[in-house]
Image (cartoon, rainbow, N blue to C red; front, side, top):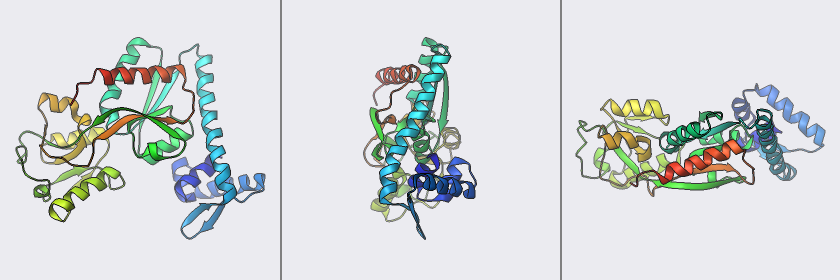
Length: 296
């Protein structure tokens, strides 16, 4: 069932096998065995990939529920066996990973030192798979695009402004003009597969008719921070990623709007899934961290 739901999401056996760390023949064989057991054809194979049949579409929704509930059941059982000392598995999408999550984790470990936490960062696609298969309890970070996918629910924690940032000694640190005037500078931008990147490029095109050429694509927090602090690049990021640096003055934000509306940061979980007590404790810590967060 895991192979079938992954193929349904990606529309490709090859991509599904990469996500699941299987060989492509093994994934194809597993899918064929499931179809034989059910006596139903779940997918149409075509030049553009795998398309669900009517029967497949009806069954995949139920398979998602079964797979996620097995993961949830395993987590609850672990907590009971360990006498309530559970483990929370949380996925992260920027900016939540770099702002409220660290504060919440510290508060959780102070209050419940027996709870173990596993944090994993990933792309929306990978985190969606982890969420639906019960490999993570929930995801913290930018609510979209995960919240638009059937089978998940979200809770908004706060809205974060998207800003252009650089070091105070960068030649553009005092720039008060338009975004388009910066098109020939060197940039760190979100990857091209993200909706934020598309919004940024629309802003450039609207201002000057073209997009930057000198671009490093980066979404991982540590290399992103290191690149920007070296002082040679401009970056477009949700400001929560660099809260500490902006407060200390090691980075400055240029006075311009970019990337459309503020980014909603929140918690994304499986719809209707019951969280373990440990996962619920981390959610409570996240809410408390947001309440203590200085307004921007």
